[in-house]
Amino acid sequence: MIELAPLKELDIYGIFIPPLLLWATISLVLVKISHGILAHRGFYRSDLEQQIFDMALFVIFTCLLSFFIL
Image 1 (cartoon, rainbow, N blue to C red):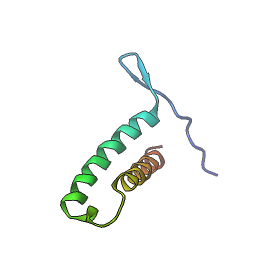
Image 2: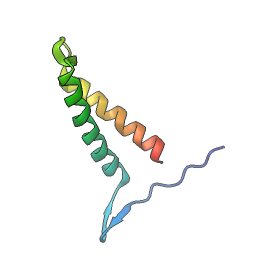
Image 3: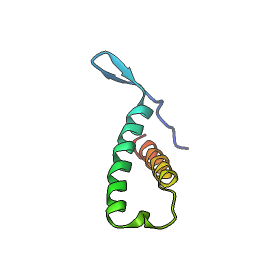
Image 4: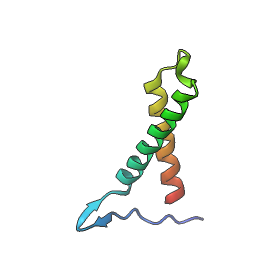
């Protein structure tokens, strides 16, 4: 059985930051980069809702970061 370590807050100069906030910030940067690449490649020309797709990318990136960094 795999034992997961408990989530510990990050201490940055006395300010405690939850790890999920850090992962969400990194995910937001990744979404902005991928949005720019996809828009440049013409992916958003279809009838696709950009905001829904970007939100799905954000959730996917956040989950992947939390699973692989944890």
